[in-house]
Image (cartoon, rainbow, N blue to C red; front, side, top):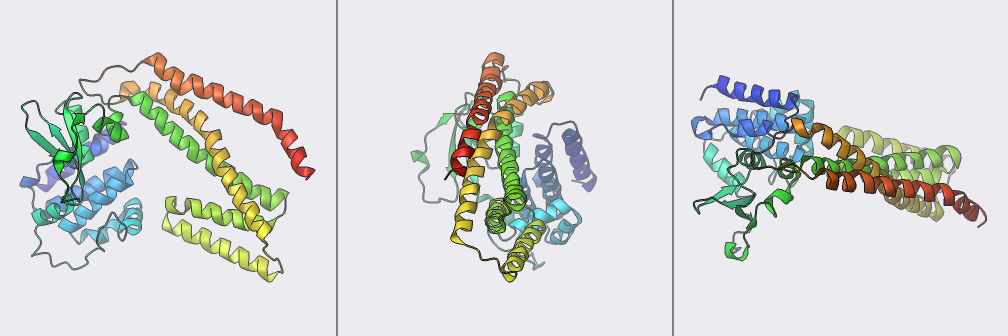
Length: 366
C-alpha cells in the first residue's frame, strides 16, 4: 500500500466530517487493509485516525488510536505536539488508564513487531461477538468498524450478539447470554444508536449538554454572588475551590494550573490581610455547591432536551442511515422531547417565581 492511498483515505474522512457525517469518518481509515501496510504506514493510519476522532470530540477513541500509532511508530510521540488538541489528549492520558503502561521512549522496536503490538492492545479491549446469518461468529473490538458494519447492513438489528471482556481471561463465555443487537449493542453506545434513532439521540445529548451548561451557569452565578453581593470572601474561596474541583477533570492541564494557582494566591492574600476562614465559610460554600449542582442540573436539562430534539428533527435527513433503519415516531419523540420538558420547565419557573420571595423572607428572618 502506498502512502498516497493513506493520505487519500484521510482526506476522504475529513471530507465526510465537513459534511457533518462525523460518525463514519474514522471508519474510512479503519477500513484500510492493514495486511497491505508496513509498520510505519500503520502508525500513520492510526495517527490520522486519532486526529479525526479528536476533531469530533471522541477523546477516548482518539487516545486509544494515538496509543496504537505510537506503538507502531514511536517517533510520532514528538509529532503529537504539532497538533494542539492531540497534544492535550496525549499529555492528559499517557499516564492514565487509557495508556496501560507509561509511554516507552525507546525507539528500538525490532523485537516488537506491529502484529505483536496490535495483539497486545487488543487483549485489553472489550469486544462484541455477533452471529452471522450462516451461524459463524464475528468479533468486533473497534467502535468505528461496528458503525461501518451497521451502515453496510452486515450487522442486522435482529442478529444475536454478546458483550465479552477480553481482560477477564478466566471468564467462561458460555455464561454470557446472547441478545438481539437492537436490545443490547445498539443501546450500548450513542454512536450506534444515532444511526437508527437520530432524533432521540440528539434529545439525550441535548439533555446532557443542558445539565452541564445549567450547572456551570449556576456555579458562576454563585461566585459572583459571594464576591460582589454578599461580600463573603471566605465562602467565595471555598465555593470557587469546590467549583474548580468539579471542573478539574474537564479542563485542559494549563487552565487547571492557572485556576488552581490563582485560587491559592487569593486565599493566601486574604489570610495575610487578616481574614480568618471559619467553619461557617466552609459549610456555606459546600451547601451552595450542592444547591448549584442540583438546581443547575434541573434548570438545564429541560431546555437542553427541547433544543436537542429540535436539532435532531432539523439534522435527521442529513445523517447517514443504514438500509434497515425505519423512521422514528414523530409524535412520540415530540411529546417526550419537547412537550413534557416544556411543561415541566414552565412549572418549575412558575414555582420559583411564586415561592422565591417567600423563601428569601424566611431566610432573612432567621
